[in-house]
Length: 72
Image 1: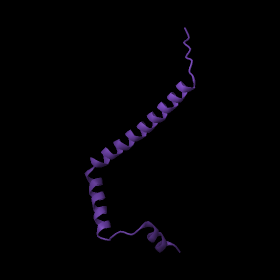
Image 2 (image 1 turned 120 degrees about the horizontal axis):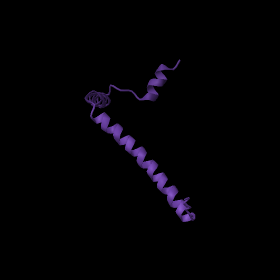
Image 3 (image 1 turned 90 degrees about the horizontal axis):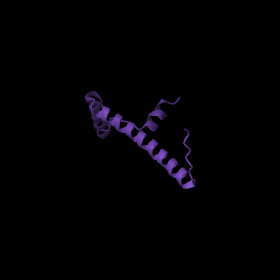
Image 4 (image 1 turned 90 degrees about the vertical axis):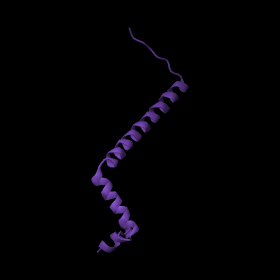
């Protein structure tokens, strides 16, 4: 037996908005999982902290400056 669903414009808009929000939630979940992986990786966290220390100590250059130095 075939079932038929009749959707009006309001129903279609609701379905499209729900799909958009689900897509956003799925993207956010992926980003959260990636963050958790980084936070649980001691080597990665050590590298991040070292990088922050390098920036604060002036041992880092802006990308724009570095590219200008490397340009022929």
